[in-house]
Image (tube, rainbow, N blue to C red; front, side):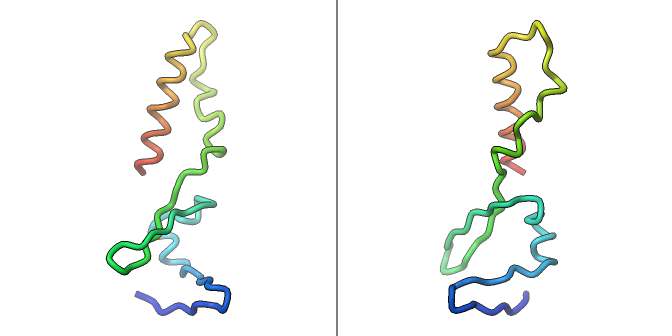
Length: 81
């Protein structure tokens, strides 16, 4: 637990140790929500950063439907993390 200051603009700085604890530094965006009168931060995957993650798996004769299924499976795994 750490005390932070809320600025006149409503901004806070999330302490570095807390950002590292939830791997927030790896993401440019985070989802913020209120649950039971508490503010919750959840890192989200920047979809643009996923571009080309399967490029090394692409095969010349692979059906587009199979490629899409592979992409959906990998994106789903990344979002769950």
